Length: 155
Image (tube, rainbow, N blue to C red; front, side):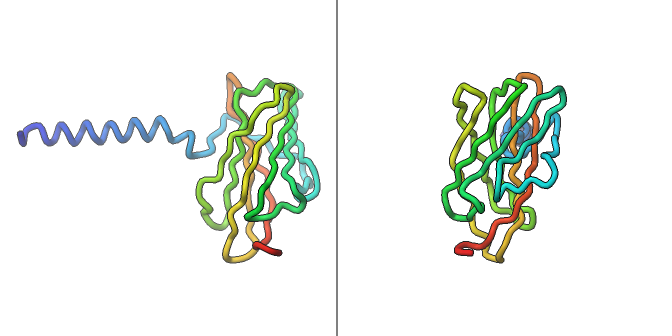
C-alpha cells in the first residue's frame, strides 16, 4: 500500500496541473493582440472606438453616464471588419483586487453585442478601473483595455 502512495500523489498533482492549465485562460485576460483605444475618449460621456489592424473597428459604450458603482450598467459593443466568435468584458480594479468581474456579451446578429454588469463599490473612495474588451475570432484573441474612474457609492 505504501509503495503506491508516491504514485497517487504524483498523479493527483499532475491532474491539478492539467485542470489549472486548461481553465486558466478563463480566469486571466490573455490576448494574441492588444489594441489601444482611441486616445482621449471618455467612457463616462461617449462611445469609445478602437481601430483594428486591417481596417476593422470596435466601439464600446457603457451606460448610464457617468458610470456608477453598485448600479446596473448596460454594456454594448459594435464590431465592424471582423467576425467575432465570442465577446466578453472584464472589469478589474487597478489599485485593489475587486474579484472576478467578467461577463459574456450576447450577439444581436448584426455586429452588436450587449450585456448587463455591475461594478462593486470600493470602500476607499474613487477607484481606477480597467474595462478590457476581449474579442475572440477563429484565429486570435484581441484585447482592448479602456481606463476610467468610478466614484464611491452615492457620489
